[in-house]
Length: 272
Image (cartoon, rainbow, N blue to C red):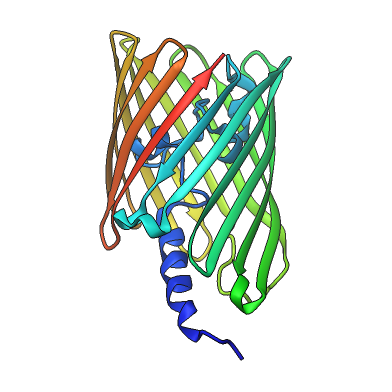
């Protein structure tokens, strides 16, 4: 018998947030969050946990630290440390994240690799390890799954992307109330006037329906990027700004979701 049955209240609280937030855990990188959750055609600072194929197109190695506060509550903040390291025609991606409150924690790790199959096509694969823990109850729920990604650059303007998350996996506690959901994601991006990008994606989770994501960004003076986006299921509005400083990039964004409130995200990245 559980010593503290009330612990399942925050368990339910966090699991509800996870379902509403995204098709995957942890929360998307600040830039993609500002774009309404669009990321399948991106090759930003957190490809390892989002679309592993983007690792094949990155131009520099980098590391990123990010923090997100769902519902503006520091007690359930999500901290993420990730790195991307070029290796010839591809790159290795590693991401470590943690969240939770006292007595209930989740950790997540992604190990990913992406590479160019030819100058216009990149593919990637990622292995996801995670663990939910109730230490006071001696309950631990580890798990492992994987993801596949693909990106195609049709020309200088059009890009296509797709990803398959958690098609199969192993769960150390199959009866634990929180499980990873299978997700199929696809979309495109379009570059216009050399400074703007339009993004549109469809995310499908069997049994949970479709999520439509749309985003727009614009680059000013090569160093400042403004982003905005919307998504459905539930409806969410987002915006963000990124500023570059000689190899460093600082980003701030937020998502406002109906029924669950605001989640701000802040990140700092360094590329070399």
